[in-house]
Image (cartoon, rainbow, N blue to C red; front, side, top):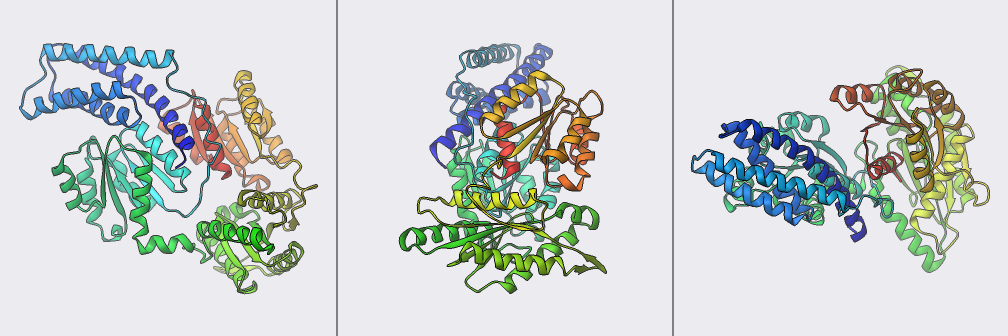
Length: 550
């Protein structure tokens, strides 16, 4: 991972950690006040967990002063517990004094802005699909967010869980390739969770890495004997975690196949496409051997999924893949880029020839319904063609050109192929964001910040206007508040998601409602993501990028 990217992730994590630590310190103050002259076993464990969290996380984030405090008290409390000695009044007063010291340190960090908050993940941010799925299980939210951002940037699909009791059920839902697991967690510890996983034959291909502050030799041996593939101690270096995951996966036959083939459709993977297009560009720079690429997106695919079910949607993807593979040359290659998006790489082929081939297949597919389960489904797609013409062009620029041409085909009404033209296609191709909020301050702030980094911004202060605007501007992403003057944001989300014309639009709810029930309700209404106020602008930008796959 590049140094700038690492620095950006660390600064975001530091900020999140300071805020989280501030909340936990307040809870510790209340707990110690209630304890008075002695603590019961449960309260003692809570105090130990607090210093354990601070020790591992602060050290990982380079906050050495806080890490030293955490390490000192974690060691002292463990010794007392092992000796069966309770926390007396003198010890409790010492702990309280340390809590006040931590509180002062947090105030200093905030006041002097030691933790930077203005760093953006824009540069170098990529998200390559099919790299693998990782489930992170840790009760430390800061560590979860840090690893989630780092691994997502490296191209993994990441799931997070801060509740060890529900982690086992989440394994069945997500089907991860790798689980990164903390040992010390409330309710169910990492050892017990690992034992449960290893008892299930269907999970035999899942790799488990322990990531823990517990660093004794005996604990490491125990973890490896129980079936863990690796053991990383906190504090850790992000690059080390990334490399260890990659190393473990590369030894897996399942992963080696996944690197090159899409499991569902049989098309080549996006990972392999990135390798091949880089090779073709290098060949063009050396020998002037031209080539073209074609971006393909199935029209109204979400409608098919919603109306007939995902099993039918999957069948459509397979049939489309089969159709193209049968009708392109052996030297051409067909890739699943992500979701319902595909790419064709055509060596030694001019853009006009590529257009002719793909447009012929488009017409044939549109006239030949796909039959599944006794149902005939008409399928169309939109496509964009781009030819390499400039020896200074980068992989990213060529992909962007084809993507822009495909987006233009969508704008023209779908079911067509468009050739990229530098003079006619580039205009108005910035991604469009619709901001929906009745607070002027929020609208102006978001509008200024997001337009400054290159997005087209459209604003609405009520639900009715937002719904009307979606079919006029076809936004790529909608950032939606739940509390609006004329109708609830959930209703707005449902109505937008039911419109065929904007089925591909992503919705991010940005709301003060932060209860789990509200978040679940928002996702059920069709939202693609949910972020609570007050929010981090850096996090919002990263989430938008992930939605757009920038």
